[in-house]
Structures are given as C-alpha cells and as structure tokens.
Image (cartoon, rainbow, N blue to C red):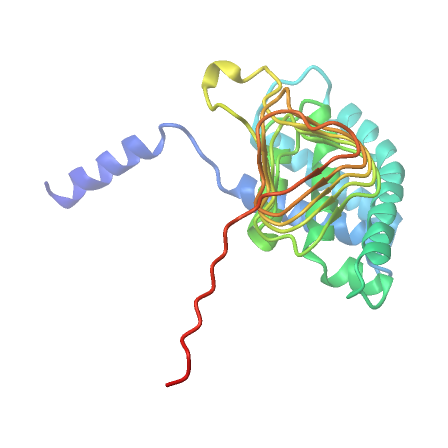
Length: 263
C-alpha cells in the first residue's frame, strides 16, 4: 500500500467515531482553574468565575450535545452549588486532619494529600453529572485518577466528612452510596458483583452507612450490599453480602514462619 492510500485509510478510520481531544485538554484546564478558584488564596474569585463561565461555554460548544437546559442556565445553577461544595470539602479536610496522626497542618491536607484532591474533583464533577452534562464530569474525575490513583465515578453519592487515607488504588463505582463520616484506606474497591451492559440503569455498587471504616485492599461488591453503620471492615476482606450495623469483619490468613536454626 502506498503512502497516499495509507493516509486515506488512517483518515477514514480516524473519524469513526469523531474525537476532538481539545475537549479533554480544555476540561483539564477548566478543572485546574476551578480548583484554584476555590482554594488558592491569590486567585480572585470574582475574576475567575467569569473566566470559568467562558471556559464552560467553550466546553459545551466543543461537546456539541443537545441538552434540555441552555449552557447559561446550567452554569448559573452549577455555581449556586459551589459554596455548599466548598463547605463539604472543608469538612473533608477537617476529617482527614482529625483522623490522620501523620497530618501536621490543615494546609498540608489541602496541598499534599492525594485523597483530598480526588474527593475535591469528584465533588466538583458530581454536580455537573447531576445536571446531566455528559462526558465532561467523567473526564474531570479521570484527570484526578491519573494524578492520584483514585478512581471515583462522578455518579457516586458521597456524604459529609469523607476520608481516603493514602489513596492509591481506591475504586468507587457509579452507583455507590457512601454516607457520612466514612474512612477508606488504600486499595479499597466498592464495585459491581456482575458486569453486563444491560445492568446500566441498575444499582450495581454497595451502600456504606455512617461511621464505617474500611481498611486496605478490602473489596465490597454488589448493589444490594449494605455495610451497616459503625462497622469496621478489615484489610483484604472480600464482601458480597450485607453486613449488620456495629460489626467487625476481617479476613484471617494463615501465616507460617519457619526459622532455620543457626548451624
């Protein structure tokens, strides 16, 4: 095949489907600007809200989706939720400070904790998800995933004072419901028991009630699975059915140590 035919074939397949990666790049820039608007002391809120509106409109123009609400109405509704989002994120930061003995200051939480950053981008993306904005919320949380190793689907519902410690490897599915004062450690998965496209509109991921702690590498699966309030799930536990409130669940491995005597 000559060069011209190769180029023609590449162009033909490249358009199936049509992808404009500027949307991805601009979404990441929008996400950064949004985060700095909420938290950076040197970023002027009034100026940045106008900038963010322009960026949002550009994103919607590039996406070319027909939504019931016009872009301006969507944006005005979204920014009306930002004070509550910021209040919730401040509660998340306080929860981390109060629970982690390694945290030395509240500033450290905001600037150096990947779990907090992942939660922040999730909360900012979730409101757009609730408004029915397609793709952009998922690209926002995927941006945070790439930076932190935490994969939170923007459709998940997460309550107040949420704490992810160490962060890396945490996965929270689209229909997961997490209530208040929940703590997760690295490697925790809140996933689906079955993976099939016809389950798209069903609740596939577990519910975690108030004051639950889930330790490293625990896996909790299934839309009907509920972990009751005040429970503790130990590391490496595999759970596919509900846990009553005030329970302790743990995986008990068999560990053998063989010591060779000194010769």
